[in-house]
Picture 1 (tube, rainbow, N blue to C red):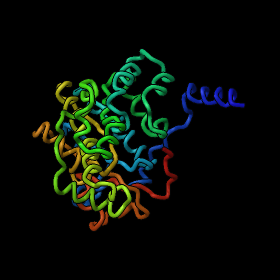
Picture 2: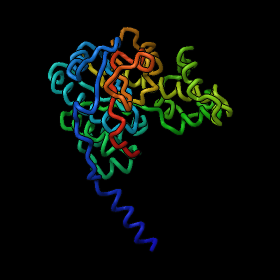
Picture 3: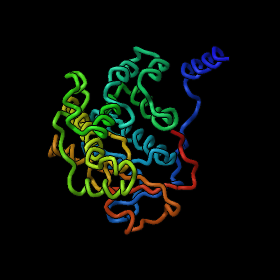
Length: 300
């Protein structure tokens, strides 16, 4: 029985997923600017033309949000790809798999080997693959922006000083050490989110330091992308908390490139997705996209 199960597992890894992304539909979301004024996706794409980086802050299981991201990226590539270097940047791939990602984008390795070597998220096939495949088709750079999870965990368990014991090669995958502290606003927001959880009782300062490693590493590799690709427009995907209110990753980016022009698009699913609630949605981003909470969630 075990050999058969092993064979089935191998087959599952080797065969690319046939799952498809939710179809983009304007009936399943409403978008607003920072004042709560209704806008369209076309308005957001137009604003992107004046930015260096567009952050899409998602809820990872938001199928509608993922469809919006894919459509926005497609439109940005179509509108600006002939004028600027459009770069895709992803929290969903860790920095130590950049070589694997580049090999796949360059058609040097198969999708099978890309999947088995890059540690993709469980919802990669439905939610992120369409963007990566468009980048591959158009020969656009893709940044594996995230800090390797094992090092984030290292900091959460033992603090920043643990990173000093890493090899020079491993440190190259992170933001330059010592990376920056979180702002007071971000720290307060993070601690409020954690609350009296078991993780917080273990040592909130170390957990916050690990979150900042995450933020700083994404920001650093975005800044590198802007420096390496002249007149670049970076489209970066991350969980909403990292960039809400232009905090977190945005703050770290502006430490590396103080004049970077940034747009933050924060996406949330809501039961009442047609109305901007000032008490809930003010300050989340330059644009807030509310999606239909009744749509079936993505699976991670």
